[in-house]
Image 1 (cartoon, rainbow, N blue to C red):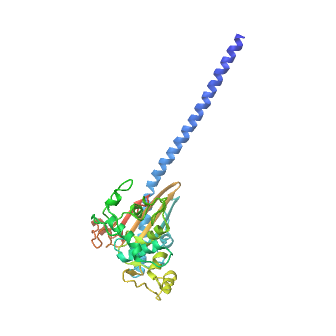
Image 2: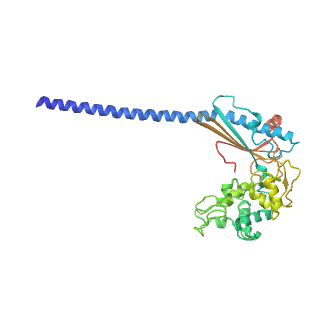
Image 3: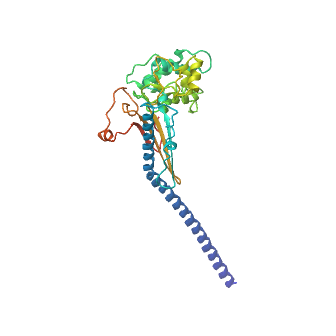
Amino acid sequence: MKKLGNRFRRGSVLVFVLAMIVLLSVLCLRLMEETVQELRHVSQFYRRDDLRMHAYSALDVAAGVLAEFKTFDGGALKPGGGWEDPLAWTELSPLEENVRWSISIFDESGKLPLFSTHPKVMKEIFAIMHKGDDGLVDEDDGEPYYDALMDWQDSDDEERDEGAEDDYYEDLNPPYFAPGRNIQSFEELRMVRGFGHDEDDPEEGGLFFDRLGHETQHMRNFRATFSLYNEKSVNFWSASGFLKKYLAGDDDDLYESLISGNAYSQDVLRPTNPLVPTTPTSTVFRVEISVDKGKANFQLHAVLGPHDSLPGKVKKPGKTKPGSPLNRKLQYPFRILSLRENENLID
């Protein structure tokens, strides 16, 4: 019996040791997996930074193609000429194997300048969005949105007839203040009275954001209609369907011409709204670049404009800062109005 007990104890110890070995093996395997994942994660960021060179090379390709087409068009770029796909035009590829890149160019000048559009035009557009398809549009319906936006941006405390200043925003939960400067992004509009959630009517949303905070179709139309960077005329060929409809008004023939026409055609019906200066050419461009190698990705977003453009969100149109001596020496064909890496915070 004594020998049997000793054998039982030795067997129990052996089982315990084996169990500990299995447990330690599982833990070591798990630790190795975590280490490998961490190394992969770190290496992705290293490779992503290494892809920066390719991204900025692609930006130079885009700027070079735009400058070349500008020369072909006699100094004025027109949409639909082929510059929208610079890689197809140049047939260039990255120097390094296993690197893939893409370049997309969009015409930012097909939008109204947000900070200098005539008040009547903005009120009418807000009224169209407010009214929707329900009957005739009254400019007065857009007044509350226009006044609230102007009060948000101006530096004084004088409240417009249907606007809102700090007294209104201080009573919200949480309270905040009107910044007294031009908006920095369209996302900021959810903070402005009338555009986002209204505490006084929690079941209803605003013009641009519903009660759950999601963007409405009006917000999407507003993004496609107004620009934080274009300061001058609107390229009616590149305008959104919503803006073309507004520019055409009740003229169905003009609307059909804008929708189906060609920028290089001589038979052009041009919008004649005296409050909206228009042009058939492109001047401001949004460039989106993506570079991939394996699982690593680097993104570059830029807005390019003419040299007399103001960089960033303009406050006083017409006052342009001179470029740096290095930029003047390089003679870069465009002025970079905004530049973001690995994020889209341009608007």
